[in-house]
Length: 336
Image (cartoon, rainbow, N blue to C red; front, side, top):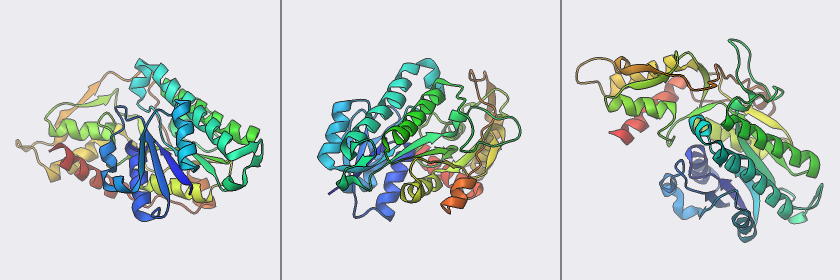
């Protein structure tokens, strides 16, 4: 019996994907989660489905570990989330990002090629439906001015060590399709938000700092713009690409939902004001504090998801108001 391998399945998006797939549609599939359980991975994220998956703690850049997983569980699908993803950390220690994001992706691709293919463009009969889905980010395209959007034809122009390593991994995936005929698809998503996100990210940081009575840090002027995508919607889009995407193609996943950091912080504060008012009656917005900007901080990201909407009939269903309220409520329960 074959199995699907989810790398980074104990992380934010990966764990949401595994749980939603197991609970909604993968009852009959064997699911193997491979995660190194570094600072961003937490096995407790999978407690709800731990008796229905196989969990392997290991490094995707370790060829022996990856080969053993493929051989032991007869992997015929890979959904590749595993990555170092925090931009600030990539500025401080870029080597870790090169190892995980570039070398790790190469090890997975090379192992998949060896197991699934007899020769370039010759797939082994037992793996004729095998597929490798690579999850990436809109940050590989660099920054936008006040207008315009990223599309699948936008040139790669990464501005941080993190985004550069993700761009490198995207190109490796592309090369394995054109050189070997490996059945790959790539998705590039906008900023995700929702339950299980690591504390270091913007929305959890805002909520945690507000509830603790500390300053809410905002980089620079707070006018940087991001396109926000609810994690559950992202997981559904990944499944759609896994099922219906055309081999060798890239699909941008976004929700046409641009907000400045200032607006999103104030929106969170308004929800907190309603849910858990401060004892002094003031708004949590009074805790907003501007700090030195991040080096190389991109001004604006925005995705045009027309391709996945028209070709795969997917569109993000969750409104930002609903998604943000659900997210804030989840973190209130976590932090109080």
